[in-house]
Image (tube, rainbow, N blue to C red; front, side):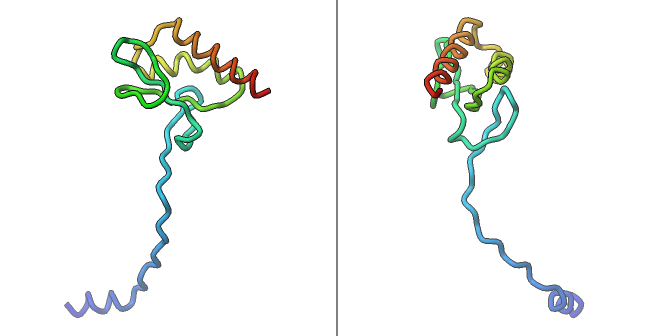
Length: 107
């Protein structure tokens, strides 16, 4: 018992770190970079077999807003992997067209 008391007296107490707010982060299915949720767009598999953006229940995949064309080449495989194959090629094409339109609007 005495040894435990001596050990506690000899070892300094650890300085407590201030608590930092938790940052919700997800991984982009295309580039595999982990980023805050606010910088990503979620695509979720809907009950009717389609894909919707935003807060949809069920399996989902996150894609970052990277503006380059090389990133878009990886989106199709990433969405298929993230949604476990529950996405048609036409829907992937529609997502890519929408991203291209948004990129053109930004300049």
